Length: 110
Image 1 (spheres, one colour):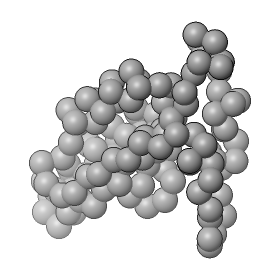
Image 2 (cartoon, one colour):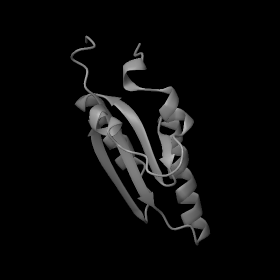
Image 3 (tube, helix red, strand yellow):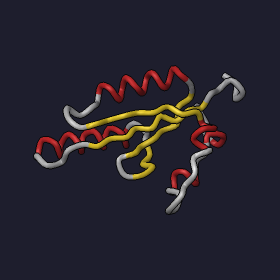
């Protein structure tokens, strides 16, 4: 697949999970670890994102996400094109290291 035909996208995951009971804390920890192991980067607290290469990758990661959902709480996801994501404006604070270091046009796929 040539560079021109690739459509890089971002999958953003927003979650609000209870952590009062011990079982809830465990579910939060398992979900958080899944996100990290699956290649998501923290954008801000309870907001994680990852770069995808097209709709096939988006469907694959959506299924993986659905298979690892915690039993309680609220989890939402949003798919954006790389151009839409790049137009996001940071109003207060600093960019995380991951956003400074990696842009979609710098990504190498093997």
